Length: 429
Image (tube, rainbow, N blue to C red; front, top):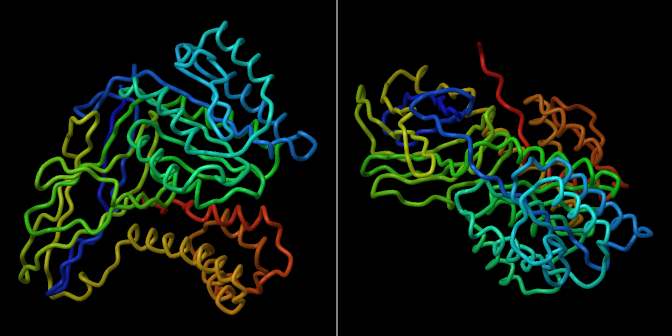
């Protein structure tokens, strides 16, 4: 059984006239028994959608050979009983295995057959990513109560269908499966893959070279095999007159969830959290506007619940207390401050890279310097290392940097797509 719990971190004190409450909600799963425990016999579906467009023949065929090896590596770690399929994607989606369509059940025979089919992957044609998503949707739509995951790999842009076709394919897949998108090399478009992964509760990342694809596919599949519970949601109840301004996942990565919610009733909304393994912890920043109160008044700003397959259990409260003590009302909760800084870091990187590409060196230097400063203060060493491939860092404490004249395309793209990764706030024991 998987057990869920939640904790709220906030400064509940507001000054006179204050009407905005910020809180960080930490949701944790663990193995155990409680009122919020759920059985762990949920079926798992894994679909591998591999780009087989003509550009995968580049680099002397290294890309397509790596795609074969990576697909085989993913198949090798499927747990017995997993439902699975492999899609070869170019300007259309082709069922590579099973060839008759539908899903196969993982056992020694089907895995061997699928691996043999993977050795026959060849590259030709164009790129229509929406068709790959539609293919995955057709395979998974009959398994709505499963933990369903798609690995989507491309090395290029979505050039052989209209943008609205991709948007429609994404919309049809929402709530049906999670999708981790990976771009091979540097000829793909980060915003296209981010649009997919953000909507489908997944991640986007770069695989700089073909030789790194196998390990990435294996790791993504192993993560799915560890999942235990599907359809978890953060349910927020707010009293009449209050308004949820935003809900954002802030750890392990930044993701705005505000527009993904569904109304449960007039006062409650569900924010989908996807599927979970037994030992996971994620943080969410919630901001709520509430009616103002008088000095000494106390008000419930939100009731936090966790809903699994629609069944909710209350787990924590977000409160507001009005005070005329400035020492209380001006104190910024450390969790809220930390993740607000991490959001600023991602924005600074995004804006800095955009300015650099536009030739605005002054703005790029200021923005990327600020990013270095925030990352250094937060102990986000991974992001500091990525930034150092784009700028020369003279003083990380003040954010004094100089733009590098020659930057490898893969380094700039890695900084872009990994800018939303966060470091967790250090909690005092």
